[in-house]
Length: 276
Image (cartoon, rainbow, N blue to C red):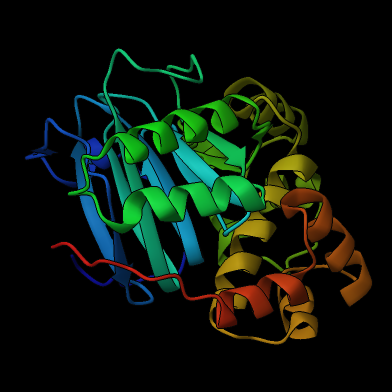
């Protein structure tokens, strides 16, 4: 593990970051703690994996971009996907490996899933002691998979820009989440027409520029909340006109308010069996 040298979301393709991608055939099932800023470098498994943050925020980078989730979400990583993990705030990381032929979601690409109270407790209980092979734990996994099937997907992704013109605009927004410039103004600053950029956002990301900028701001907001910054400060640093506007967008995205998220992250500490 290593500490990052930047606070910006890492949207580079993991394959290009390290030519020797670590291959661990079996996706581990375990719980471990990571300090703020720590990473698990790019690797892949021959099995599927579920990633959940019991506290803090976890960001998972794949070739498609950066997927991010607080405690009300989990990230589904299909077998064979090259990915890396990054902790924002002190992270209680819960990992569950599933055989490649057991795909309760029927998904062949990463996804962010809603995690309600029951599913959260199932994930925590199942990862507490990965050495347990009892029939009871097998039944626990069956219920957990049933709950996963019923979990709606959430669009919490910062896609990786391929076109250099799009990448330049994205870099400007990431560098200053509070930047309120329009797409036309950002295009003028980078020498690309607004119409061209608008087309690139839809073609590469499948979303409009305002939709993408909201995703970017939510990512930065989660990181700042994990660093214990006040809600009002986070709102202004991430470009919302008021704390109330930020709270409403956050609630719609994550199912709780920023204050509730912070209280939960600061007080909930499930038992964690650290496995190196």
